[in-house]
Image (cartoon, rainbow, N blue to C red; front, side, top):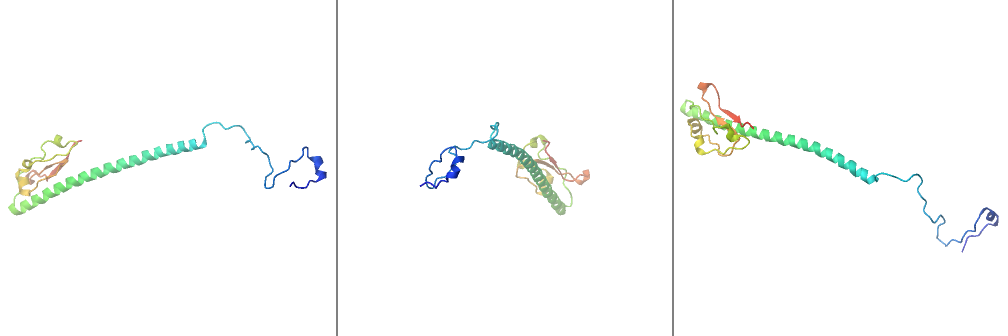
Amino acid sequence: MSPPRDPELDEFIDEPVPPVAPGAKRGPSVAPTPSGPPRSGAPTWLIVVAIIGVVGLVLLGVLSSLAIYGVRRYIVQAQLAEGRNNVTAFAQGITHCFAETEHLPETSSRVPADLAMIAAKKYQSAFRDWSDEAFRCAESVCASPSIFSINGCSTRERRPARWWRSPT
């Protein structure tokens, strides 16, 4: 059933209006075309992905440099703590030795004898390395691998126990 037509409006309509089915919408049957010139260049999603990739790479570089700095600092602090612990144990042993014998032992040899043995690696000492009087009296034996060289000096030479870090 078509809607009633007004005869006065027929003179303004160039073509007859086709009947419309109930529930159907009136309007153009062809979708409107976008106005303006056609787009050229990369799609928007590609530009967004490229920007995120560049920002991600920059962020990765900054975070990795911070991580390298932190790990290096941690390793240095751990090595210094190891050296301090070894020297402290040796000094306490020498103090105990002096309390029992009332004299200090002679200067000990360096363990390991050559600094090249601890260059960029750890040195596993042997029991015979600790056979000097100073080490025996102090009951000081380093059983674990170390990156330091230990040497005990008597007070006659006016030098305390020392430790060296390997030249790397």
